[in-house]
Amino acid sequence: MRVFICGIDGYLGWTLAMYLSVRGHEVAGADSFLRRKWVEEVGGHSAIPIVSMNERLEAYKEVYGKEITFWEGDLCNYDFVLRCLKEFQPEAIVHLGEQPCAPYSQIDVEHCVFTQHNNIVGTLNLLWAMTEVCPQAHLVKLGTMGEYGTPNIDIPEGFFTIEYRGRKDTLPFPKQAGSWYHQTKVHDTHNIMFACKIWNLRSTDLMQGVVYGTKIEEMNADERLCTRFDFDEAFGTVINRYCAQAVIGHTLTPYGKGGQTRGFIHIADSMRCMELTAVNPPEIGEYRVFNQWAERFDVTTLAQEVKKAGEAAGIKVEVKPIDNPRVEAEKHYYNPDHQKLFDLGFRPHKMVDMLPEMISDLMKHKDRIEAKREHILPTIKWRRDGAKR
Ligand SMILES: NC(=O)c1ccc[n+]([C@@H]2O[C@H](COP(=O)([O-])OP(=O)(O)OC[C@H]3O[C@@H](n4cnc5c(N)ncnc54)[C@H](O)[C@@H]3O)[C@@H](O)[C@H]2O)c1
Image (cartoon, rainbow, N blue to C red; front, side, top):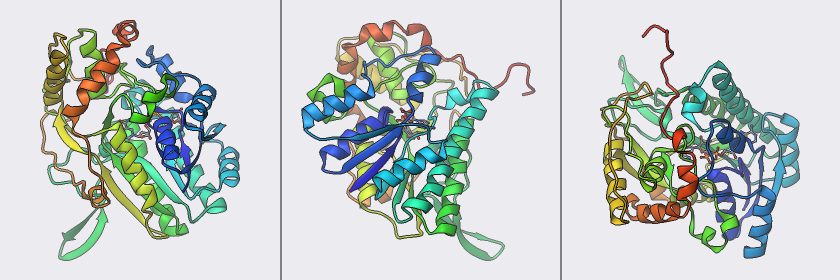
């Protein structure tokens, strides 16, 4: 299958390019290297060193004997998007090319507006370009479980049937995003659903849980094939951050009461889900939603699991909650469905089985994590000082 990956230089994008190419798919992708600049801007760096895109592509060719095609450019530039699609003629487009970080979008008005513009305009450009070049291609769009928020009822996969004042309909499940970043995903969802309706495009919106993990197996072959691993306050996600904290003897820091519960998925399982989705496309004109997560944990339980894994590796680990910089429910009901990918054959890893590998991979780069120790604790707050509470 010919798969075009938007955001191919990212944590998931580079990993997916290799994962799909190794499995016989023809892969091309685009990126503008924004993620590298954002992490630098917030004072972080990848714990696991990464090489330039050119070096990645060369290393991949050397090790696996295959080529991945790359275009450098901005998805917010319509002509660029059009050119890529015209040249590659994809059967599936996996859209990962957005600003993916909630704290970054909360920094100030510039970061909020940038995130909304970057994500919403990039997706709109893709939708319009698809109508011109490849209206039958399948858009696999990375949304987030964070679009749903934490309602006090079960969360279905995208749609639910509701009876109101004696009448019944199947409608999109309400979205209650928790950051300016998450709001962009909600806007994308609405735009994609609309494009499928009016233009007969087809798309799967993947509501992905929080991804963790240092690598996929194929990266063991050569260190130039590694993907990035961030642990700073903005771009590090919770399990990854806990593991980085553990290896340098930093206290693990759940936010607030620590009952925030989310769905999680290992990076290798995220790859498997995206492949399963791509090779099982929806009908022409169909917009569908899969909830892409494997296991559910609250952030305190997660910290305890990382503590156990750290201690098994001979590291002393402490857990101590800190004030929550976010505005979110700290104890709540959380029961989202995730059946559709399992029906397609998804069988996930267990988080507890993956932690030892993560800790051991990060131990090798302990010095790099130590060097950015002061960028671990959160300083970006959801509330604005001086604003009415
Ligand atoms: N990592 C997670 O835990 C997670 C969870 C749920 C959803 N997601 C979603 O999955 C996608 C990929 O996440 P990730 O962790 O790999 O993020 P990432 O930042 O590592 O990857 C995104 C890539 O897209 C590129 N990009 C962004 N805007 C662009 C633009 N306008 N033009 C060209 N390239 C652009 C960036 O440079 C980056 O390389 C994102 O949409 C994210 O919201 C990620």
